[in-house]
Length: 111
Length: 112
Image (cartoon, rainbow over the protein chains, first blue to last red):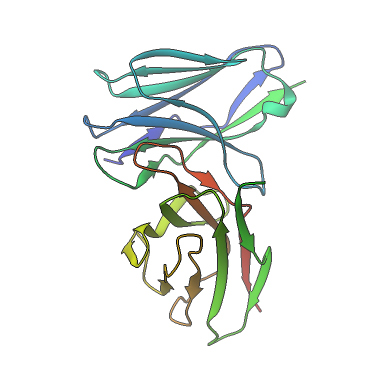
């Protein structure tokens, strides 16, 4: 079992719709969770992080964490063509300086 | 501006040659990381360092070497033992455990 798994893409959504990305992780002791956006040919950029169960909102982005079920999700509301990118989920396992990354989900927003 | 600087942006390696990728950060971060990304693939950890003069192997360390003589710098050497070095190399740093990692702009390495 992979440490971090993301729903396989690509995910195609119409402009203005909600894009929903899911991520599950294997280590129940994981403490911090991150979402990165990576445009083609560019390096990843941090868009959200969450440490506690529940929802965290930042503009059009909402991260949701459920530690009991070991999943973290990212919602992108009012999707724009500029949101077309690969989204990487990263999980910090307990007391580990390494981050475990998922393989990424590619999102395409159709105009 | 604070940030992570990787150089060069593009690098070409000849057969049997060692090449060194530079990574410098002025964020005063303790931990630094090197990842490799192949086309259409996720990130794979090569090496990481939590403090100066200490580093650990990641998942794909064979054919690579690093040093951490200064807090700001974490250079990666791709040795001739790495037979398939063509990839996008990303350096990252983070302030402390559980904080986000921040990435440099990356170096693209190709074989001549």
